[in-house]
Length: 109
Image 1 (spheres, rainbow, N blue to C red):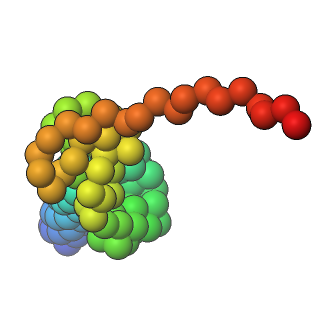
Image 2: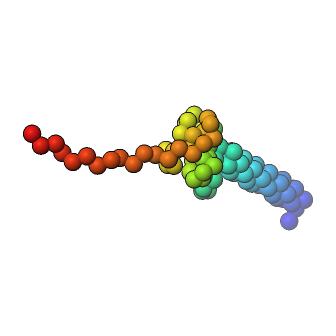
Image 3: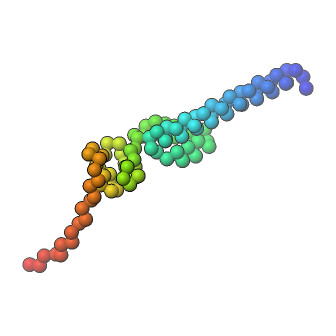
């Protein structure tokens, strides 16, 4: 091998390592972004393909964050005042169970 071939091989190897490091860094950024917004980090499986990585990062950046209910641990929209699953009131911090509907038989005329 000539010296020029070795230098070219080393340069290509360095470029490959830098591209791989940036690619993995963007995946880690997407996972951290999903966790901050209480979203599933499993979205990042789309990052196997470079186009999927870009699309997933754009989607994660556009989605609004969710908040987790301290009573039932379900996630709801950040602006919700009541948990739709258990009835927890976020503004007062009190648990308000949902009223069960009372059965009313049909009226006869």
